[in-house]
Structures are given as structure tokens and as C-alpha cells.
Amino acid sequence: MKILKKIGKLLFITAFWLGVWMLAAHKMGKPLLFPYPKEVLLRLWELMQTEEFYKITVTSLGNVFRGILIAILLGVALSVVTFRIKPLRDLLLPAMTVIKATPVASFIVLAMILIGSAKIPTFITILIVLPVIWTNLDEGFLKIDPKLREVTKVYRMPFFRRLRVLTLPSIKPYFVSACRSSIGLAWKAGVAAEIIAMPKNTIGTMIGEAKLYIESATMFAWTLTVILLSLVIEFLFTRLLGYLVKTQEAKEVS
Image (cartoon, rainbow, N blue to C red; front, side):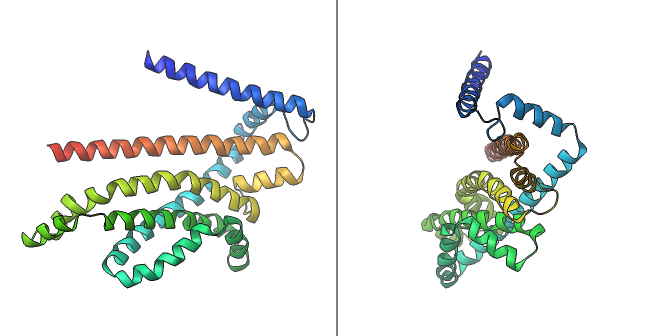
């Protein structure tokens, strides 16, 4: 019964926003610039019948996931080092603050001068995700109870056991929160970088080219692809994290 209610609610929300879209397209009266949902969906279906659509999608996903993985590994390593070396943390904090405050477009333009366009989406993804991962983990390390750390030292608890029973459980919520908040941002920033830098065979390049040639239905279709992929990625990632957390809790109980 609950599943039927959720499906009904989802269908209602979808129908509502499709109606808003249709009304806006009707009021504008310029299908060349603002197409109807039917035209966009048909164009998306046409694109999905081609092999190129999947090659382009996989390329964009690969660029973003590569950047996310590098950023997570780098963020974890930096958080451990800066937790151990406090002066290094003080030096790194302003840099992370500047990266978070600087517009993504500024980094993209600068990167276009310094590196090749093919590497820009991954580079921008790293810049978006790294400060989020490092900041959250840094806060997590600082919130570890000093008294519990002293207890592990008094009882001369081995490093790996201390890691398993104290450090990882303490920082896990911060790491999960960082990943959840950065995944969606990374995907959108990566596509934005592709639109500006226009590397070959990427979703952002397809959107940019469609805009140049005023192919609005194609541009909307690729944009819809970005939105749907973003929803799918966040859904799968949330489910994966939930599964890992439940598995870990089950192990701790047993």
C-alpha cells in the first residue's frame, strides 16, 4: 500500500511539472526556443536509439567519477595528515575556503589556459568535492572525544583496533554526509565544465553545440539526461551507503 502511495505521489508531481512546462511553452509560443515536453521526449528517445548517446554518457560519467574518486582519496589523506600536524591544517584551511568561495566558471576558464580541455571536467570535479570531503572529515576528527582517545592510549590499544572501534565510527557520519552533498554538486559542475571547455564526446559539449545551432529540443533532451542521471546517481549512492551502514551495524552487534 505504501509503495502504491509513493508511486501515485510521484506520478502526480511529475504530471504537475509537465503541465507547468507545457503551459510555459504555450505562453511563450516559440517552439524553436522553448519546445514542448513531447518534442523533447521524442528527441531524447531518438538519441537513445544511437550508440553515440551511450558513448557520450559513459565518457561524461567517467570524467566525473574519476574526479570524485581522486578527491575522496586525497581528502581522506589530507584530513589524516592535517589532524596529526596542526600547523599544516592552519595553512590548508584558507586554501579550502577560497576554493569553495570561488565561482566554478573562474576555475574552468583558468584551467582552459593551463591544461587540455579533456582533463577539465575531472579537474573541476576534484576542486568541487575535495573541500567538502576535507572540511567534513576535519570536523569529524576534531569531534572525537579526547577522553576516549586517552582511554585507548592508557590500555595500549593496537592501532587497527583503535581505528575500528573509535576513529572510523566517529568520523563515519561526517564522511557519509560529505559524500551525499558532493555527489550531486560534482555531477553538475562536471557537466558545466564540459559546456564551457567542450571536450570531445561529452554531454556538456552536446548541450553547447545544440545551443550554438539553436537546436532547442536536442539541448533540452541532453539537459533532461543530466537531470535523470543525477537522480539515479544520488539514489544508487544513497542506497549503497545505507546498505554499507546496515552491514557495519550488523557486524558490530554480532
